[in-house]
Length: 68
Image (tube, rainbow, N blue to C red; front, side, top):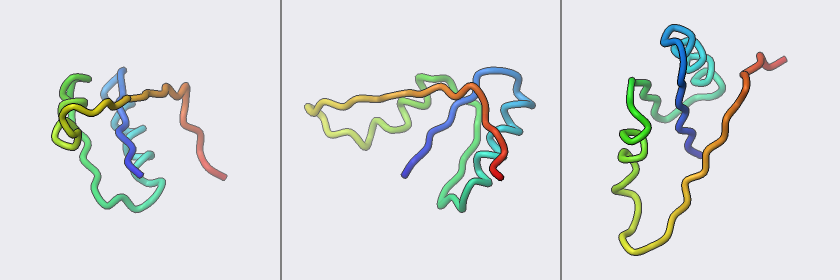
């Protein structure tokens, strides 16, 4: 499974949220960086076969709450 998380808001709060997200498991790769929406989508361009149809779906989370 791959999660591409994006934070739009105060930088310090975003860094805290991304750190919590990384602690949900043991990621094989974790890279947190400042990027635009276009730059994030462009990162995956090489994975798509030309001529095929793909859908990118997004979700918004109002908050992350601590796990019990």
